[in-house]
Image (tube, rainbow, N blue to C red; front, side, top):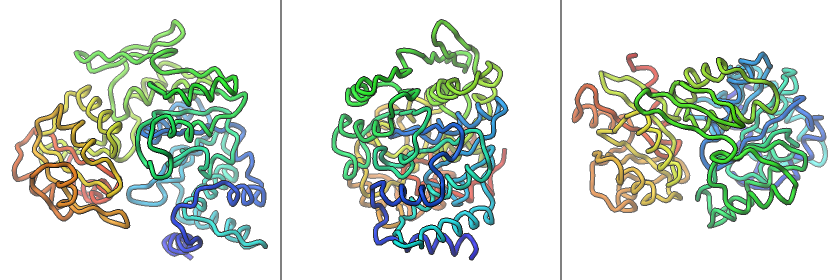
Length: 414
């Protein structure tokens, strides 16, 4: 089977899209001998900022000469985005070979019904082991405690942020969600925490006698808006005049603290990551007919607040905002975060899939009356006609908002 056929097949092997729990993955890990997929493992959990932090860690470790396997979730255009070795997406045939091994192990009696996400996680672990990497970086999914990757005991754990999202699975308070995210922690681990952690995360660290490195306490980011640079300060040391690039400085700082637990990281390596680190759909900037289109997958109030802060750090003030969001999100909260800072014109766009939400429904949920479009291509055409050269257009929302924009990669001018 080719990769498309495999993806269709694995999507049908479990009755539920999401079936949280570790027993099936634990059994598969035992069958495949994947309990130690690499000599060192880093897990990255959190509500927002996970993907950027993973890419930051990957870049720093590669710059230090290590071989690295990384995972990202979800993908935007191709499944291959989820599985990376040494900074490069795995080819179709390599992923298909992994799926074939997984399927053979799955069908040993008793046959295990795996979800799409469990297949993806196991393929990542299999790839890390078969490529004999030095470090595996595992991005935890929507939770933590019951995420498939949590069957692996990591050497370093990172929790990037805690906000309200996926409440139907994780709980309705930051404290409850913090409890789920902190489920990745283990005795004896090195731990890195983002800013403003709820008490439940700190308490879990205390219970396990962990000494986390905490953003804003043990290390700090300072932005120099005049020079468009930033500095990182920790333990009496400082690296300054770091460029503000595609990745948020806050996430690079988390990545740096995590990577330093495994290997020394030079200032030049940190500067390279700050300048060149990139992940699709996270503050991704594309020049199109003289306009700057900024893509981001901030899809909850905390993510929208973080996005607003990052845009201001880069002196980017959107003239137009194009937004598509899924049904089960805090639409009004997201709108308020951006509209309280930017006086932009909005175009709301239909989102697609099982949790699709029409532009009309989104307008009602946000309480705004503005232009609407059936898809992102139409919305961008509308924004292009109404904007001028030099204007900033923000394309953001649920991952589906960015999934609708692959043609930007093919038609942009740099």
